Image 1 (cartoon, one colour):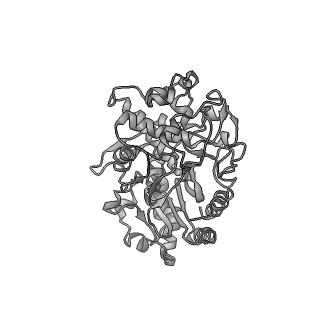
Image 2 (cartoon, one colour):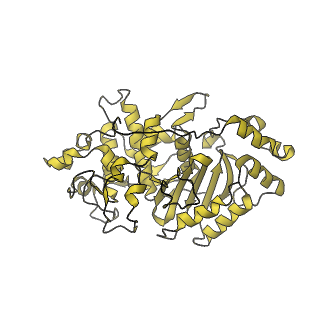
Image 3 (spheres, helix red, strand yellow):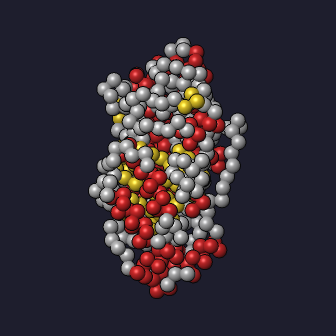
Length: 403
């Protein structure tokens, strides 16, 4: 980690601003079912979903009263009517669209079925988060070995990966998380030939760190590494070490062979995906049911996941021949380690602050985090399959609702 220069941002809403927002709300509406003590807590963390979950100012798929809309504006800083207009636009593209918007820890808008969703390549971001958690735990000696972003990946994988191929010995974990491994790119993970052996035997086509290409095999190699080190499947490790501590429901993950399909096959609800995003907004910290604040990731690892990757930034973009995503040629500049960023305002658009990060999957599955606004957006739907402008157009409409 010492080779990277990280910085941190003040993500938490100040007590003065939060209490000021409370004072602006109607006292009658404010106390009606919201819980005054909880409302005044500037260090809010949602209790487990089994114990009530997120605090909410709305009912799913229901239009709030005028008084409650005033509460939404005062507490969450959201104009509900404009947010609803954003949802209606998104729904025009897919009838089963789910949209969840959380600001300052309050659900300000929630539409759609609320069911478990196949999140496609958002799974790559979850896999990178699992790798970061593995690094954090390895520092305590739990696994009897060092695991850091700078660790040579061949030391964490079955011997069929390396097979005496010296160029592969130069590939580090951070090359896989940043899509700069130099392995032959591939993005057809449901092709019958796409097996664990196929992934492990991907040939090197460029020196690591020189080329950025979108590559599903990179994430699957990370999933295999997690299983090799922990002796747990990626799914079981993620649930034990991330989902359970933050109060999420059990997250399922499909298999290929004896490994989880790390690149594309996680399944979870919008509320649980938002909970994972909230962990990053809160800089890797979470409050346990007994009141303790625990650190699941340290600042450096949170920054590793959510800041521009120096490796990707200095690599040359090359398209992936069989990918359904026609990625722009500046994609390397917008990639972090498993997550995307809006640093140059091109990926999510100029209306969205430059500190925003996001996870993105097929059929425009989205998790968007805007730290400076304490804002989380989750979008699910059965379509469109690929529409690169959707995330910019949707976020532009949502930004008009932020007050």
